[in-house]
Image (cartoon, rainbow, N blue to C red; front, side):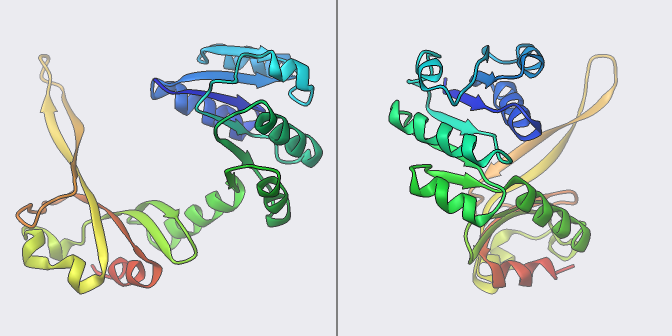
Length: 229
């Protein structure tokens, strides 16, 4: 089981901490605000009230063996930078820091952050994509040239196999997975749905109504397949 430290329990930090916890990970949640720590204590493995800019306090928090530490502080740039630096000094394997703009991101990378995230920017991109293309459920920009998206299978593809469609060749995108809803009935007769994920589907896999693609490809090719109805 992986273990993570989340430092700074604002909206971003608490969301990350809770999501990791719900996925069965061990989470050490840290903030100097007692109220936020109390909220995190309801789901975190450990919730600590301390000032993470104090090297001694952070060093004694027992986080030196976590798989990764997430710094969820963005507005207080000085604290964000200092905490990131301390985490690297105490030997954290991977530090992921939140930044509000590219300049802050460059500073964080310079002092050792393995990854910098821009939550507001990323959420803005996802919102714009959902408004432009309602059939898109996930949109992750992996680089300046490549994107991963989860999108409804076009109606014209239903009832056909991947081999018949030749999507990889025709559109230049990689089908990472197919997500499919499976209808189930419990003992009381109540109807519900579960999700089946077909990872790395073969040419013989067929498509049905309600399927979703998880696709990876160059942005220009992703744009092509988004236009297919």
